Image (cartoon, rainbow, N blue to C red; front, top):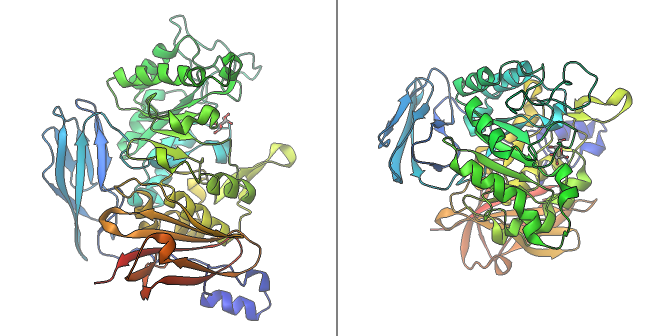
Length: 504
Ligand code: GLA
């Protein structure tokens, strides 16, 4: 980043030079007054169960109220949860309000009842990068509790997603996960770590959150668990009956069934099949395509019913992949937009599972602060789904500062849904920009190099003329009016993320 917080200056004087270019916490803590955060538009299908928790910071107790809610929806005033079902298609202009002892807040919100879900990139969490297959009903419930108690829910995080490892692993000698993969009716059997799938879904919904499940189109998942080949409709109906809201569909063993990888129809086939099944269910399912970018999935993910599609393999937790997957999205922006998003994979910071002796363990990220600011900034500029991969029960202040800056999240969740793209590149220095609703622009000035450097965001590259107010988004502070260009010093692997608004 670009200036030194006082604590770090102190550390430098004590000789901690390696930290010299690394910022500490930049996100201002939320104040006592209510503030409504998150997306400004939300889509659901007619007649399906609806659940939305108004994300708001500020001291509790807080009371919520609304104006203009469509018929069929009811607000729970103390929690801010809106639930029910809306029969009639349409765009409903709603006003959300929150009040507490310190003040009140109001925000416009649009509910769109129609065919399109994920009008903004989905936000949530997944088991994979913190637990691998060591997952259970109890841990999912504990993580859902933590999504609420950590405050993540107050910034728009909503999906608690179970990844690989919840059902039977054919051939396993471990009694907890072995045994018949399906019952006498052919229904999927959860493993012993998941004794009550419906109860678990109800529990997560009871917190105002949504819950996701994982399976694949092949005979087995990536970790060798039973998958849906030949049972697609039966499995989807089962997920709906349990109460899931989200499906990640992971190609894995289906790869062997693709005979001609040059034929896009072969890549589309298993996803189109599941997409059509999900579309006919009586619940809304956000459909996450996971096939590592094969056959240029970004060009057809939306057409087969996908709401977001992984553009590459597994990002893991190391800087090289973050940079490769993130900056590698240049050129894919054309296919992203409301209802369908490019997905460079989860944001794996905080405590994540790291390979090593004894099979690995949960440990803090090895990324520098700059690298973590870059991860969140780049994903937000790219309108990527914000799916946290770390352990929510072990969140520290720094990680929360990365995940919960509402002005950064506003860029990600911007209603226009326009994915950002690079506008200039000079050696290791890249400037990326994204058009936002109302005519302002989000600009990321990235230093991919090893030394601190000055980066210039030139109006000529951004297609701007005249005077613009530059706002430091991470610090949530206006920096003044600028003409022609804005320059910032940015440290190794760091970013200056700013918002440009035409000066009056
Ligand atoms: C693949 C996917 C990951 C994860 C694992 C589970 O590697 O890309 O995101 O779902 O499978 O086994």
